[in-house]
Amino acid sequence: MASAGSVTGPRILLYSDDRTVREQVRLAVGPRLRAHAPQIEWHEVATPSAVIAAADAERWDLVVLDGEADKSGGMGLARQLKNEVYECPPLVVLTGRADDAWLASWSLADAVVARPLDPMRVQGAVAGLLAA
Image 1 (cartoon, one colour):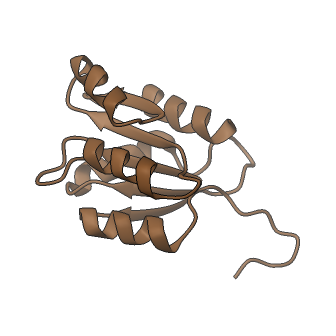
Image 2: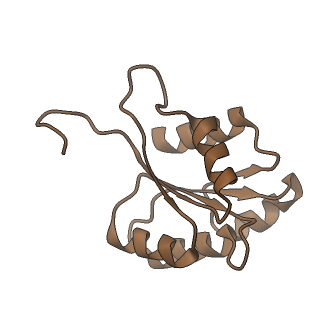
């Protein structure tokens, strides 16, 4: 529990069915957005139903979705969240390749990062959306 007057860091919901992708994103962004900033609170999920449940139950500062996840990719989930969640947080979609950016625009994602995941691009997308 946070003490009175303490500053909490951003809350990020991270979806991928591949734990190595989730780890790559967390490592790219780091524990904080900048030195002396509050620590990021990550919540990782591996299924589409967990994304929907978490988005319905809690408020998030940002959601990162793996567009290449099996069975239900992040692009479809992004569009669903944008259409169904009141005051939907900003969304980052991870695509399989740069040429998939046009498809990610259909998803209504606020930012797109293509594979291979460049840590600077991932961190930049996350920091840029959280700053806005």
